Image (tube, rainbow, N blue to C red; front, side, top):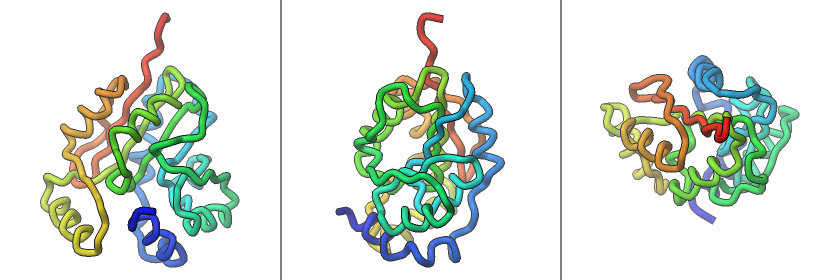
Length: 189
């Protein structure tokens, strides 16, 4: 098990007390650009469910401690890694990844998996930190200091990675906290 997952298991009881809330407006703007109705929503790397609880998503996370927190919010949970999602192809309307993508192992594989489970017209919304900003460089240094095996992207790199797995990129906002969406094309329409 990666240190990142073990750390979040240990940190779970304090997580919601010390972490700032996510920007719900940016997440909702990302969901708004989907090309289909959104009833089946996953938050991958959703931890304690702080975002999932605001949009009615199922929390998918490898850290058992974080999932216990999410279940206390009466959220549906799935213990899984983003590298191997237990969902069938084309079965999910929306996927959220909020402040977590930099912790994912094999990020390319994770993006492929998320694109695989998205239904045509479905949306991937990634809210992440841009390493090219002043605050981003500080966050990169801080995560290395505590021993996380984090990999941060620039806006351009994240857009290119999302596009490379076959999703149509739809930027939502830029800055230290960026929100990039990708819509799975509807073929044969």
